[in-house]
Image (tube, rainbow, N blue to C red):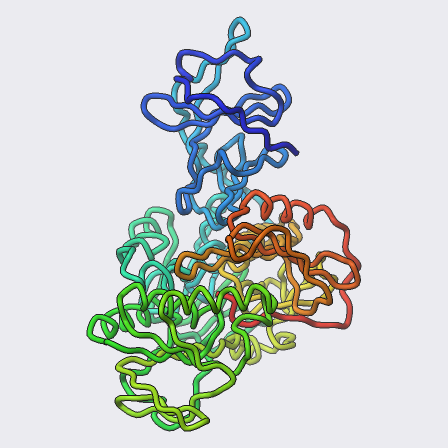
Length: 522
């Protein structure tokens, strides 16, 4: 593994580059026909690829080369250097590639190469049809991966949502803040699914799964037979049971429809109370402040997000929000809501045109329970993401899997984890027997602060901080019994990538009896 970046003014690769300018593992930034290109050398191979990630446009030149892949520094998307295809989400589209020709010790970047079409699969062991229950990150990633791997059979996605699969992290960030148009929140267009033969059924409410007859039944009486089934029903917000919680100015945030309603209400609001001081609550606080709304945050903890990121990072997050005008009411709970205010457990009354509740989510496992699948605070799956029923897989927020890195059976509610599980489940439906061993990753953006987190640590006994949290230049390592469990980075993207690779290469003990999970991380 190497990440040397050759510092040169961007040359025109069409005019040629001396091979001596490229050492193994080096990246050289340049251009071809007005497009930014990276020239990469791996052993005796040369690759010319697009310089930006297809997810959010991250600079791949600041990323990491691992084997014959390149990883984005921002959100850890991974691309195959040979094909340009996304090996791991959150990127869905490939990066462009160009043909490289070597003559007389000089490398010339020639024409752009077409995308390689999937090689159709032909095997009697393939499922005759695939049904995906759920229209979120895991379900969408699974459908796309099936087609990318060459599966040609029918794919049906049954989504209870009214909108196509969306970029859920954006709902509490740029879209809510008014910095991103709605079209940016939709992962794919209706035309994409039609073009790829993916039958997406919206407002499709499944009420029964028969694992013996391999049939899915909907409330409206429609039924679908499956050769392989993916359960990706996700999670739903925990509802607050206090007087006034059902008023129409009280909002939850999970779907695109939720975010639309919140955006419209925010346009006419001057003050907001957010009940819940975890990721969703604090990202909403940041977005509403960007709209100029007065924001109060209520939470039972003494330090926000300390349970996930520790007191040191949590205290700094608190200071960032306060610097941006957010008022906190910690160590307290909401007792009642009326049409103009929220009353706290200590009697404090806070004016509010808008109330947002973000006190956590719970996995939607009712269908799995009805089907008789093994349940343990989520749907139990093996390392291949298969449930206790043959041909039935689970991915995303509902799946509890044996994590090689922590040695525990875990369930994690991260958007990127859900996408990667969808990809792995799809490959295993096709008989590829790929273990799910991706290291959990998430990111959060709040005001001018961005934090990326790699690994899985619910309990730790030591926190090591390298750099300065206050200067937003640091890496924070969480350890238990001297063993590194997770790393959070602020403006040290490359260190985050290196930590991910380090976790991938560490052999962990087998699953233990200590089940762990992290709630509401996106």
